[in-house]
Length: 491
Ligand code: NAD
Image (cartoon, rainbow, N blue to C red; front, side, top):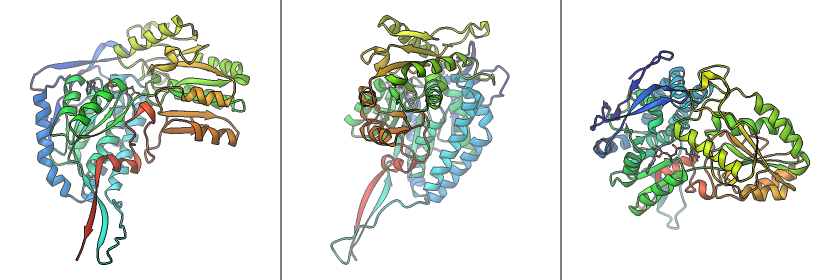
Protein backbone atom coordinates (compact mmCIF):
# COMPACT_ATOMS: atom_id res chain seq x y z
CA UNK A 1 0.00 0.00 0.00
CA UNK A 2 1.25 3.48 -0.76
CA UNK A 3 -0.09 6.91 -1.40
CA UNK A 4 1.25 10.22 -2.62
CA UNK A 5 0.21 13.35 -0.83
CA UNK A 6 -1.50 15.56 -3.34
CA UNK A 7 -2.92 13.40 -6.11
CA UNK A 8 -6.48 12.28 -5.66
CA UNK A 9 -6.19 8.57 -5.34
CA UNK A 10 -8.03 5.80 -3.61
CA UNK A 11 -5.92 3.52 -1.45
CA UNK A 12 -7.00 -0.06 -0.98
CA UNK A 13 -6.07 -1.19 2.53
CA UNK A 14 -5.66 -4.85 3.46
CA UNK A 15 -5.60 -6.59 6.79
CA UNK A 16 -2.17 -7.33 8.27
CA UNK A 17 -2.08 -10.87 9.67
CA UNK A 18 0.91 -13.01 10.60
CA UNK A 19 3.34 -10.56 8.96
CA UNK A 20 1.43 -10.50 5.63
CA UNK A 21 -1.05 -8.21 3.89
CA UNK A 22 -4.28 -10.09 3.28
CA UNK A 23 -7.48 -9.05 1.52
CA UNK A 24 -10.59 -9.78 3.58
CA UNK A 25 -11.96 -13.27 2.93
CA UNK A 26 -15.31 -11.77 1.93
CA UNK A 27 -13.71 -9.54 -0.72
CA UNK A 28 -16.00 -6.74 0.50
CA UNK A 29 -14.73 -3.19 1.06
CA UNK A 30 -15.92 -0.19 3.03
CA UNK A 31 -15.41 3.12 1.18
CA UNK A 32 -13.87 5.94 3.11
CA UNK A 33 -14.67 9.49 1.94
CA UNK A 34 -12.81 12.72 2.51
CA UNK A 35 -15.05 14.72 4.86
CA UNK A 36 -13.83 17.98 3.28
CA UNK A 37 -14.88 16.79 -0.22
CA UNK A 38 -17.28 13.93 0.03
CA UNK A 39 -17.02 13.08 -3.67
CA UNK A 40 -13.42 11.95 -3.03
CA UNK A 41 -13.01 8.34 -1.93
CA UNK A 42 -9.77 8.24 0.05
CA UNK A 43 -9.65 4.58 0.94
CA UNK A 44 -11.26 1.20 0.58
CA UNK A 45 -11.11 -0.54 3.94
CA UNK A 46 -11.52 -4.28 4.40
CA UNK A 47 -15.01 -5.27 5.52
CA UNK A 48 -13.72 -8.28 7.42
CA UNK A 49 -15.57 -11.27 8.79
CA UNK A 50 -14.91 -13.39 11.84
CA UNK A 51 -12.83 -15.73 9.63
CA UNK A 52 -10.27 -12.90 9.24
CA UNK A 53 -10.35 -12.23 12.97
CA UNK A 54 -9.83 -15.92 13.73
CA UNK A 55 -6.78 -15.89 11.45
CA UNK A 56 -5.33 -12.90 13.25
CA UNK A 57 -5.93 -14.40 16.70
CA UNK A 58 -4.27 -17.64 15.58
CA UNK A 59 -1.26 -15.67 14.29
CA UNK A 60 -0.99 -13.73 17.55
CA UNK A 61 -1.26 -16.93 19.56
CA UNK A 62 1.43 -18.63 17.47
CA UNK A 63 3.82 -15.69 17.99
CA UNK A 64 3.15 -15.35 21.72
CA UNK A 65 5.61 -17.72 23.26
CA UNK A 66 8.69 -16.59 21.29
CA UNK A 67 7.79 -12.91 21.71
CA UNK A 68 7.39 -13.25 25.45
CA UNK A 69 10.81 -14.90 25.74
CA UNK A 70 12.70 -12.01 24.12
CA UNK A 71 14.32 -9.59 26.54
CA UNK A 72 12.69 -6.21 27.09
CA UNK A 73 15.67 -4.62 25.37
CA UNK A 74 15.18 -6.79 22.29
CA UNK A 75 11.52 -5.91 22.06
CA UNK A 76 12.41 -2.27 22.72
CA UNK A 77 14.87 -2.21 19.81
CA UNK A 78 12.00 -2.99 17.44
CA UNK A 79 9.82 -0.27 18.95
CA UNK A 80 12.66 2.25 18.45
CA UNK A 81 12.82 1.24 14.78
CA UNK A 82 9.07 1.62 14.36
CA UNK A 83 9.31 5.06 15.99
CA UNK A 84 11.92 6.24 13.48
CA UNK A 85 9.88 4.93 10.56
CA UNK A 86 6.72 6.62 11.81
CA UNK A 87 8.50 9.91 12.34
CA UNK A 88 10.16 9.79 8.92
CA UNK A 89 6.75 9.34 7.32
CA UNK A 90 4.95 11.98 9.43
CA UNK A 91 4.12 14.15 6.41
CA UNK A 92 2.65 11.26 4.43
CA UNK A 93 0.76 9.82 7.38
CA UNK A 94 -0.45 13.28 8.38
CA UNK A 95 -1.85 13.90 4.90
CA UNK A 96 -3.63 10.55 4.92
CA UNK A 97 -5.15 11.35 8.31
CA UNK A 98 -6.33 14.81 7.18
CA UNK A 99 -7.92 13.36 4.06
CA UNK A 100 -9.64 10.60 6.01
CA UNK A 101 -10.96 12.40 9.05
CA UNK A 102 -10.47 16.10 8.45
CA UNK A 103 -8.19 17.39 11.21
CA UNK A 104 -5.71 20.03 10.07
CA UNK A 105 -2.43 18.84 8.60
CA UNK A 106 -0.46 20.51 11.40
CA UNK A 107 -2.39 18.58 14.03
CA UNK A 108 -2.21 15.35 12.02
CA UNK A 109 1.57 15.58 11.60
CA UNK A 110 1.97 16.56 15.24
CA UNK A 111 -0.03 13.53 16.29
CA UNK A 112 2.15 11.25 14.16
CA UNK A 113 5.31 12.66 15.74
CA UNK A 114 3.66 12.15 19.13
CA UNK A 115 3.10 8.52 18.11
CA UNK A 116 6.85 8.16 17.55
CA UNK A 117 7.55 9.66 20.98
CA UNK A 118 5.13 7.22 22.61
CA UNK A 119 6.88 4.31 20.89
CA UNK A 120 10.23 5.55 22.20
CA UNK A 121 8.88 5.95 25.71
CA UNK A 122 7.69 2.33 25.75
CA UNK A 123 10.85 1.12 24.03
CA UNK A 124 12.65 2.48 27.10
CA UNK A 125 10.24 0.61 29.37
CA UNK A 126 11.91 -2.57 28.19
CA UNK A 127 14.91 -1.61 30.36
CA UNK A 128 13.10 -0.41 33.49
CA UNK A 129 12.35 -2.31 36.71
CA UNK A 130 9.15 -4.33 36.83
CA UNK A 131 8.86 -5.45 40.44
CA UNK A 132 9.71 -5.09 44.09
CA UNK A 133 11.65 -7.15 46.57
CA UNK A 134 9.45 -7.63 49.64
CA UNK A 135 11.01 -8.71 52.96
CA UNK A 136 9.74 -12.14 53.91
CA UNK A 137 9.10 -13.15 57.52
CA UNK A 138 11.16 -16.22 56.69
CA UNK A 139 14.79 -15.15 57.04
CA UNK A 140 16.00 -17.66 54.41
CA UNK A 141 13.46 -16.86 51.74
CA UNK A 142 13.50 -14.42 48.84
CA UNK A 143 10.17 -12.82 48.03
CA UNK A 144 9.64 -10.51 45.09
CA UNK A 145 7.12 -9.46 42.47
CA UNK A 146 7.58 -9.70 38.76
CA UNK A 147 5.25 -9.03 35.84
CA UNK A 148 3.85 -11.53 33.36
CA UNK A 149 2.31 -10.63 30.00
CA UNK A 150 -1.40 -11.34 29.60
CA UNK A 151 -1.20 -13.12 26.25
CA UNK A 152 -3.06 -11.87 23.17
CA UNK A 153 -4.37 -8.33 23.65
CA UNK A 154 -7.28 -7.05 21.55
CA UNK A 155 -7.07 -3.32 20.77
CA UNK A 156 -10.21 -1.43 19.65
CA UNK A 157 -9.57 2.21 18.75
CA UNK A 158 -11.60 5.19 17.47
CA UNK A 159 -11.02 7.48 14.47
CA UNK A 160 -10.38 10.74 16.31
CA UNK A 161 -6.71 10.12 17.19
CA UNK A 162 -5.96 7.41 14.66
CA UNK A 163 -2.22 7.28 15.42
CA UNK A 164 -1.78 8.31 19.05
CA UNK A 165 -4.49 6.13 20.62
CA UNK A 166 -3.62 2.81 18.95
CA UNK A 167 0.08 3.46 19.51
CA UNK A 168 -0.43 4.18 23.21
CA UNK A 169 -2.15 0.81 23.47
CA UNK A 170 -0.06 -1.32 21.07
CA UNK A 171 3.34 -0.10 22.31
CA UNK A 172 2.88 -1.03 25.99
CA UNK A 173 1.10 -4.27 25.05
CA UNK A 174 4.14 -5.30 23.00
CA UNK A 175 6.91 -4.11 25.29
CA UNK A 176 5.51 -6.06 28.23
CA UNK A 177 5.50 -9.23 26.13
CA UNK A 178 1.95 -9.50 24.77
CA UNK A 179 0.99 -10.00 21.14
CA UNK A 180 -1.69 -7.82 19.57
CA UNK A 181 -4.79 -7.98 17.40
CA UNK A 182 -5.80 -4.42 16.52
CA UNK A 183 -9.12 -3.25 15.12
CA UNK A 184 -8.82 0.39 14.04
CA UNK A 185 -11.89 2.45 13.14
CA UNK A 186 -12.67 1.76 9.47
CA UNK A 187 -13.02 5.55 8.99
CA UNK A 188 -9.24 5.86 9.34
CA UNK A 189 -8.17 2.66 7.60
CA UNK A 190 -5.54 4.29 5.37
CA UNK A 191 -3.78 5.84 8.35
CA UNK A 192 -3.96 2.50 10.15
CA UNK A 193 -2.42 0.71 7.15
CA UNK A 194 0.49 3.17 7.15
CA UNK A 195 1.12 2.52 10.85
CA UNK A 196 1.21 -1.22 10.16
CA UNK A 197 3.67 -0.60 7.32
CA UNK A 198 6.01 1.00 9.86
CA UNK A 199 5.72 -2.00 12.18
CA UNK A 200 6.25 -4.35 9.24
CA UNK A 201 9.37 -2.52 8.05
CA UNK A 202 10.72 -2.38 11.59
CA UNK A 203 10.94 -6.17 11.46
CA UNK A 204 8.60 -7.36 14.19
CA UNK A 205 8.26 -11.14 14.12
CA UNK A 206 5.25 -12.39 12.16
CA UNK A 207 2.12 -12.39 14.32
CA UNK A 208 3.44 -10.11 17.09
CA UNK A 209 1.10 -7.37 15.87
CA UNK A 210 -1.89 -7.93 13.59
CA UNK A 211 -4.57 -5.64 12.19
CA UNK A 212 -8.11 -6.55 11.15
CA UNK A 213 -10.47 -3.84 9.89
CA UNK A 214 -14.21 -4.17 9.65
CA UNK A 215 -17.52 -3.18 11.07
CA UNK A 216 -17.43 -2.47 14.80
CA UNK A 217 -20.40 -4.74 15.52
CA UNK A 218 -18.59 -7.62 13.78
CA UNK A 219 -14.85 -7.28 14.40
CA UNK A 220 -15.00 -5.09 17.53
CA UNK A 221 -17.58 -7.28 19.18
CA UNK A 222 -15.72 -10.32 17.84
CA UNK A 223 -12.61 -9.20 19.74
CA UNK A 224 -14.60 -8.72 22.93
CA UNK A 225 -16.06 -12.23 22.56
CA UNK A 226 -13.08 -14.17 21.25
CA UNK A 227 -11.88 -16.84 23.70
CA UNK A 228 -8.37 -16.58 22.23
CA UNK A 229 -8.06 -12.93 23.26
CA UNK A 230 -6.96 -12.60 26.87
CA UNK A 231 -7.47 -8.87 27.38
CA UNK A 232 -9.33 -6.10 25.57
CA UNK A 233 -8.45 -2.42 25.58
CA UNK A 234 -11.07 -0.09 24.14
CA UNK A 235 -11.30 3.64 23.47
CA UNK A 236 -14.51 5.06 22.07
CA UNK A 237 -18.05 5.97 23.02
CA UNK A 238 -19.76 5.02 26.29
CA UNK A 239 -22.52 3.09 24.56
CA UNK A 240 -20.08 0.75 22.80
CA UNK A 241 -17.52 0.66 25.62
CA UNK A 242 -20.01 -0.55 28.20
CA UNK A 243 -21.04 -3.41 25.88
CA UNK A 244 -17.42 -4.39 25.27
CA UNK A 245 -16.75 -4.34 29.02
CA UNK A 246 -19.78 -6.50 29.80
CA UNK A 247 -18.83 -9.10 27.20
CA UNK A 248 -15.22 -9.26 28.40
CA UNK A 249 -16.29 -9.45 32.05
CA UNK A 250 -18.74 -12.27 31.35
CA UNK A 251 -16.00 -14.45 29.89
CA UNK A 252 -13.39 -13.48 32.47
CA UNK A 253 -11.10 -11.46 30.20
CA UNK A 254 -9.28 -8.42 31.52
CA UNK A 255 -10.60 -5.20 29.99
CA UNK A 256 -9.96 -1.49 29.97
CA UNK A 257 -12.35 1.19 28.69
CA UNK A 258 -11.63 4.85 27.99
CA UNK A 259 -14.78 6.61 26.86
CA UNK A 260 -16.49 9.96 26.51
CA UNK A 261 -16.33 13.29 28.27
CA UNK A 262 -18.39 16.41 28.91
CA UNK A 263 -15.45 18.46 30.00
CA UNK A 264 -15.88 21.79 31.78
CA UNK A 265 -13.67 24.84 31.89
CA UNK A 266 -14.42 27.15 34.82
CA UNK A 267 -13.61 30.83 34.49
CA UNK A 268 -13.24 32.36 37.96
CA UNK A 269 -13.74 36.05 38.68
CA UNK A 270 -10.00 36.61 39.01
CA UNK A 271 -9.07 34.72 35.82
CA UNK A 272 -6.91 36.20 33.11
CA UNK A 273 -9.80 36.42 30.65
CA UNK A 274 -7.65 36.49 27.52
CA UNK A 275 -5.89 33.29 28.52
CA UNK A 276 -9.21 31.70 29.47
CA UNK A 277 -10.73 32.63 26.11
CA UNK A 278 -7.78 31.19 24.19
CA UNK A 279 -7.91 27.96 26.22
CA UNK A 280 -11.66 27.64 25.70
CA UNK A 281 -11.26 28.02 21.95
CA UNK A 282 -8.25 25.75 21.68
CA UNK A 283 -9.64 23.15 24.10
CA UNK A 284 -13.15 23.23 22.69
CA UNK A 285 -12.81 23.76 18.98
CA UNK A 286 -9.46 22.41 17.80
CA UNK A 287 -9.88 19.14 15.93
CA UNK A 288 -13.45 20.40 15.38
CA UNK A 289 -14.26 19.53 19.00
CA UNK A 290 -13.67 15.84 18.32
CA UNK A 291 -11.42 15.10 21.27
CA UNK A 292 -12.53 13.09 24.28
CA UNK A 293 -10.92 15.83 26.37
CA UNK A 294 -12.53 18.69 24.40
CA UNK A 295 -13.97 21.57 26.40
CA UNK A 296 -17.71 21.43 26.05
CA UNK A 297 -19.18 23.26 29.04
CA UNK A 298 -17.89 26.77 29.71
CA UNK A 299 -18.86 27.67 33.27
CA UNK A 300 -18.29 31.35 33.95
CA UNK A 301 -18.67 33.10 37.28
CA UNK A 302 -21.20 35.93 37.20
CA UNK A 303 -18.92 38.94 37.67
CA UNK A 304 -16.97 38.27 34.47
CA UNK A 305 -19.65 36.48 32.45
CA UNK A 306 -20.50 39.25 29.96
CA UNK A 307 -16.87 40.36 29.51
CA UNK A 308 -15.74 36.79 28.89
CA UNK A 309 -18.60 36.07 26.48
CA UNK A 310 -17.84 39.14 24.33
CA UNK A 311 -14.13 38.33 24.11
CA UNK A 312 -14.95 34.71 23.26
CA UNK A 313 -17.42 35.63 20.53
CA UNK A 314 -15.02 38.07 18.88
CA UNK A 315 -12.39 35.37 18.56
CA UNK A 316 -14.69 32.50 17.58
CA UNK A 317 -15.98 34.61 14.66
CA UNK A 318 -12.43 34.87 13.34
CA UNK A 319 -11.76 31.13 13.21
CA UNK A 320 -11.20 29.88 9.70
CA UNK A 321 -13.12 26.76 8.72
CA UNK A 322 -11.82 24.80 5.73
CA UNK A 323 -10.04 21.81 4.29
CA UNK A 324 -7.40 20.64 6.76
CA UNK A 325 -4.84 20.43 3.94
CA UNK A 326 -5.14 24.21 3.41
CA UNK A 327 -2.51 25.90 5.60
CA UNK A 328 -4.92 28.77 6.39
CA UNK A 329 -7.48 26.44 7.97
CA UNK A 330 -7.90 26.52 11.73
CA UNK A 331 -10.65 23.93 11.96
CA UNK A 332 -11.62 21.24 9.50
CA UNK A 333 -14.89 19.42 8.86
CA UNK A 334 -16.64 16.91 11.09
CA UNK A 335 -15.01 13.55 10.46
CA UNK A 336 -17.93 11.84 8.75
CA UNK A 337 -21.52 12.23 7.62
CA UNK A 338 -22.61 10.49 10.81
CA UNK A 339 -20.70 12.96 12.99
CA UNK A 340 -22.07 15.88 10.99
CA UNK A 341 -25.67 14.71 11.46
CA UNK A 342 -25.11 14.21 15.18
CA UNK A 343 -23.65 17.69 15.65
CA UNK A 344 -26.46 19.34 13.67
CA UNK A 345 -29.04 17.41 15.69
CA UNK A 346 -27.55 18.68 18.97
CA UNK A 347 -27.55 22.23 17.64
CA UNK A 348 -31.26 21.95 16.80
CA UNK A 349 -31.95 20.44 20.23
CA UNK A 350 -30.07 23.27 21.93
CA UNK A 351 -32.27 25.84 20.18
CA UNK A 352 -35.49 23.88 20.85
CA UNK A 353 -34.71 23.59 24.55
CA UNK A 354 -34.28 27.35 24.84
CA UNK A 355 -30.53 27.99 24.66
CA UNK A 356 -29.51 31.00 22.57
CA UNK A 357 -27.22 30.30 19.63
CA UNK A 358 -24.97 33.36 19.49
CA UNK A 359 -22.76 32.37 16.60
CA UNK A 360 -22.07 29.51 14.17
CA UNK A 361 -23.80 26.19 14.01
CA UNK A 362 -24.37 26.22 10.26
CA UNK A 363 -22.71 25.71 6.91
CA UNK A 364 -19.85 28.08 6.01
CA UNK A 365 -20.64 30.57 3.20
CA UNK A 366 -17.66 29.60 1.04
CA UNK A 367 -19.04 27.63 -1.96
CA UNK A 368 -15.78 25.67 -2.12
CA UNK A 369 -16.84 24.01 1.15
CA UNK A 370 -20.35 23.05 0.01
CA UNK A 371 -19.38 19.42 -0.59
CA UNK A 372 -17.95 18.82 2.92
CA UNK A 373 -19.19 18.05 6.42
CA UNK A 374 -18.40 21.55 7.67
CA UNK A 375 -20.06 23.21 10.64
CA UNK A 376 -19.12 26.73 11.72
CA UNK A 377 -18.03 26.80 15.38
CA UNK A 378 -21.04 27.38 17.60
CA UNK A 379 -21.43 29.18 20.93
CA UNK A 380 -24.63 28.78 22.92
CA UNK A 381 -25.59 31.25 25.66
CA UNK A 382 -28.16 30.80 28.47
CA UNK A 383 -27.45 27.11 28.78
CA UNK A 384 -28.85 25.54 31.95
CA UNK A 385 -27.50 22.36 33.51
CA UNK A 386 -30.50 20.18 32.64
CA UNK A 387 -30.39 20.94 28.90
CA UNK A 388 -29.32 18.13 26.59
CA UNK A 389 -26.38 20.17 25.26
CA UNK A 390 -25.12 20.53 28.85
CA UNK A 391 -25.42 16.81 29.55
CA UNK A 392 -24.58 14.72 26.48
CA UNK A 393 -21.26 14.48 24.67
CA UNK A 394 -21.64 16.29 21.33
CA UNK A 395 -18.17 15.63 19.87
CA UNK A 396 -18.31 18.68 17.62
CA UNK A 397 -17.45 22.39 17.50
CA UNK A 398 -20.05 23.49 20.04
CA UNK A 399 -19.50 25.45 23.27
CA UNK A 400 -22.20 25.81 25.94
CA UNK A 401 -21.93 28.88 28.21
CA UNK A 402 -23.27 28.30 31.72
CA UNK A 403 -23.51 30.99 34.38
CA UNK A 404 -22.46 30.34 38.00
CA UNK A 405 -22.93 32.55 41.08
CA UNK A 406 -19.50 31.83 42.50
CA UNK A 407 -16.67 29.32 42.34
CA UNK A 408 -18.40 26.89 44.68
CA UNK A 409 -21.45 26.72 42.44
CA UNK A 410 -19.19 26.50 39.37
CA UNK A 411 -17.42 23.42 40.76
CA UNK A 412 -20.77 21.84 41.65
CA UNK A 413 -21.98 22.46 38.09
CA UNK A 414 -18.73 21.05 36.69
CA UNK A 415 -19.29 17.86 38.69
CA UNK A 416 -22.96 17.60 37.70
CA UNK A 417 -22.33 15.06 34.93
CA UNK A 418 -22.07 11.32 34.46
CA UNK A 419 -18.62 11.89 32.92
CA UNK A 420 -15.31 12.67 34.60
CA UNK A 421 -12.51 12.87 32.10
CA UNK A 422 -10.95 16.35 32.16
CA UNK A 423 -11.71 19.63 33.94
CA UNK A 424 -9.97 22.97 33.88
CA UNK A 425 -10.02 26.16 35.96
CA UNK A 426 -8.77 29.62 35.09
CA UNK A 427 -7.83 31.61 38.19
CA UNK A 428 -4.93 33.55 39.69
CA UNK A 429 -5.84 32.56 43.24
CA UNK A 430 -4.03 29.64 44.84
CA UNK A 431 -6.94 28.99 47.21
CA UNK A 432 -9.34 28.68 44.27
CA UNK A 433 -6.92 26.35 42.53
CA UNK A 434 -6.55 24.09 45.56
CA UNK A 435 -10.31 23.94 46.16
CA UNK A 436 -10.84 22.98 42.53
CA UNK A 437 -8.13 20.29 42.60
CA UNK A 438 -9.68 18.84 45.76
CA UNK A 439 -13.34 18.94 44.73
CA UNK A 440 -13.23 18.13 41.01
CA UNK A 441 -14.40 14.69 39.93
CA UNK A 442 -12.18 14.21 36.90
CA UNK A 443 -9.16 12.10 36.03
CA UNK A 444 -7.36 15.07 34.48
CA UNK A 445 -7.44 18.26 36.55
CA UNK A 446 -5.87 21.30 34.94
CA UNK A 447 -5.29 24.78 36.33
CA UNK A 448 -4.64 27.58 33.85
CA UNK A 449 -4.37 25.01 31.06
CA UNK A 450 -7.01 23.85 28.58
CA UNK A 451 -8.95 20.61 29.15
CA UNK A 452 -7.38 18.96 26.12
CA UNK A 453 -3.70 18.15 25.97
CA UNK A 454 -1.95 15.35 27.78
CA UNK A 455 1.68 14.41 28.22
CA UNK A 456 2.56 10.89 27.18
CA UNK A 457 4.60 10.10 30.31
CA UNK A 458 1.70 10.85 32.68
CA UNK A 459 -1.31 8.66 33.51
CA UNK A 460 -4.37 9.36 31.37
CA UNK A 461 -7.98 8.38 32.00
CA UNK A 462 -11.28 9.36 33.51
CA UNK A 463 -13.34 9.07 36.67
CA UNK A 464 -17.06 8.20 36.88
CA UNK A 465 -18.65 7.16 33.57
CA UNK A 466 -15.67 8.11 31.42
CA UNK A 467 -13.57 5.07 32.16
CA UNK A 468 -13.29 1.59 33.61
CA UNK A 469 -11.00 3.31 36.13
CA UNK A 470 -7.61 2.06 35.11
CA UNK A 471 -5.15 4.45 33.49
CA UNK A 472 -3.31 4.49 30.18
CA UNK A 473 0.02 6.04 29.14
CA UNK A 474 3.19 6.55 31.09
CA UNK A 475 4.13 3.91 33.64
CA UNK A 476 0.47 3.45 34.52
CA UNK A 477 0.09 1.21 31.45
CA UNK A 478 1.98 -1.59 33.15
CA UNK A 479 -1.02 -2.17 35.42
CA UNK A 480 -3.27 -3.14 32.54
CA UNK A 481 -0.87 -4.92 30.20
CA UNK A 482 0.70 -7.21 32.78
CA UNK A 483 -0.29 -9.41 35.66
CA UNK A 484 1.63 -9.34 38.96
CA UNK A 485 3.35 -12.58 40.00
CA UNK A 486 4.35 -12.76 43.64
CA UNK A 487 7.33 -15.09 43.88
CA UNK A 488 8.52 -16.82 47.02
CA UNK A 489 11.75 -18.82 46.86
CA UNK A 490 13.31 -20.99 49.57
CA UNK A 491 16.72 -22.50 49.32
P1 NAD B 1 -17.24 4.31 18.81
O1 NAD B 1 -17.56 3.80 20.16
O2 NAD B 1 -18.33 4.41 17.83
O3 NAD B 1 -16.13 3.40 18.13
C1 NAD B 1 -14.92 3.06 18.78
C2 NAD B 1 -14.41 1.75 18.23
O4 NAD B 1 -15.32 0.72 18.59
C3 NAD B 1 -14.31 1.72 16.71
O5 NAD B 1 -13.19 0.96 16.33
C4 NAD B 1 -15.59 1.00 16.32
O6 NAD B 1 -15.53 0.37 15.07
C5 NAD B 1 -15.72 -0.01 17.44
N1 NAD B 1 -17.08 -0.53 17.62
C6 NAD B 1 -18.24 -0.04 17.15
N2 NAD B 1 -19.28 -0.84 17.54
C7 NAD B 1 -18.75 -1.84 18.26
C8 NAD B 1 -19.30 -2.96 18.96
N3 NAD B 1 -20.61 -3.19 18.96
N4 NAD B 1 -18.46 -3.77 19.64
C9 NAD B 1 -17.14 -3.52 19.68
N5 NAD B 1 -16.56 -2.48 19.03
C10 NAD B 1 -17.35 -1.65 18.33
O7 NAD B 1 -16.51 5.70 19.02
P2 NAD B 1 -15.97 6.70 17.90
O8 NAD B 1 -17.12 7.43 17.32
O9 NAD B 1 -15.03 6.00 16.97
O10 NAD B 1 -15.07 7.69 18.78
C11 NAD B 1 -15.60 8.75 19.48
C12 NAD B 1 -15.79 8.44 20.94
O11 NAD B 1 -14.54 8.01 21.49
C13 NAD B 1 -16.21 9.62 21.77
O12 NAD B 1 -17.18 9.22 22.69
C14 NAD B 1 -14.94 10.02 22.49
O13 NAD B 1 -15.12 10.73 23.69
C15 NAD B 1 -14.30 8.71 22.71
N6 NAD B 1 -12.87 8.85 22.94
C16 NAD B 1 -12.37 8.63 24.20
C17 NAD B 1 -11.03 8.79 24.44
C18 NAD B 1 -10.46 8.53 25.81
O14 NAD B 1 -9.29 8.22 25.91
N7 NAD B 1 -11.24 8.65 26.87
C19 NAD B 1 -10.17 9.18 23.42
C20 NAD B 1 -10.71 9.41 22.15
C21 NAD B 1 -12.07 9.22 21.92
